[in-house]
Length: 458
Image 1: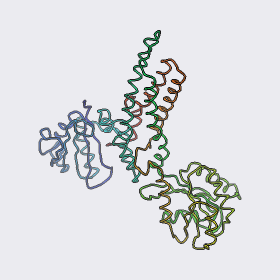
Image 2: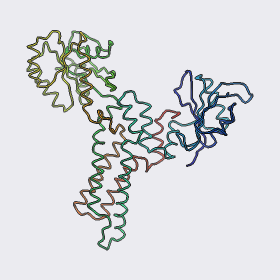
Image 3: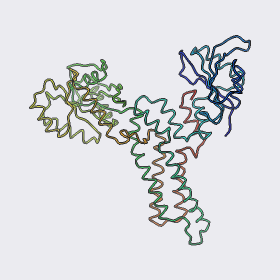
Image 4: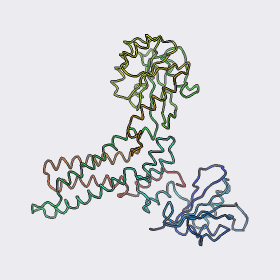
């Protein structure tokens, strides 16, 4: 375990508050903090203890009353010596504290540098380190659970074990290359095949979870589509409980997409109101309809809203067929239930052949039932429902697919009885992807890119 030069940063959110915490980590962090802290001798205090004292200027004048908490290496977040100084949340006091620390030789930390040091000191792997940022940024129950799962090891620990087994086989294949003129086989081919199949069985659910994971992290893009005057803008306003979109009886009022967020049962939905689907009457409306179609292509979930009072069964059947052709998950929502006869409702349900969520957007009735349908439709995804490991990071997805592709080529090579050098080449690619995924293979540029996205102080 090694300790780098001491660094410091505000660990709590910037701005005026009751309490602020400044974190100091690195070589001599406790000794340096002790020079500006008036109270108990921090250098003689046990780890994980908090001590009241004062912070003073070089002339002895009082800056603030503070609490210093000592964490001795390696039992700290960074595995270095760490002191966390809790002071009053005045920006002036914080700046005075940081100025005193820098005067004693402490450097101001870069974004994510504390977490980067924790990774470099073996506190966790790179996937877990990235989960720290995801946990801080989580704004829903689902994204919070996904980040916690990754922080606790998620899929990375399992992949590290499988990678080590693959390394052992690659070593044997490489050894065969030293006996190229002799017909020897150190790596048992069937055992190697079984290991590669086992790894791919782990990879495939993770790769398939990326679509759901991306929705968990960034919100579920949910586009509301339908014909003009179906009540799309009224529904958006009712769900958000505010006048977000202009509502009018004039068809084609919505010319551009309108987006906002709604939280339902711990899931974040990015609701998108769109122009009505019909033959455009002018160039501007045509642009709006094209944007509607683009949003449908990008959406994770389509809400098809129809006017139950005025739509015919044939029109509904045609609309459902068109939605199905998009290949997107969808739900059917029948509007204007308050103006609908039982006979018309039954006729439309018979044509739909599936569950319809009936509402009255204008009267704001049955909206809770609609929210339950939206939540249920997303939670049918096993990863969301069970809280199992979910891939939410594009970098992870890239390395997982790269590993899978390389293993697929290696298995095909086994089937074709390729020479050990060709087999070793694909296995090396798989190992490189797995190593870069968990951080066992890194470059300074990669680490700088990842941790620069963290907030300062973390």
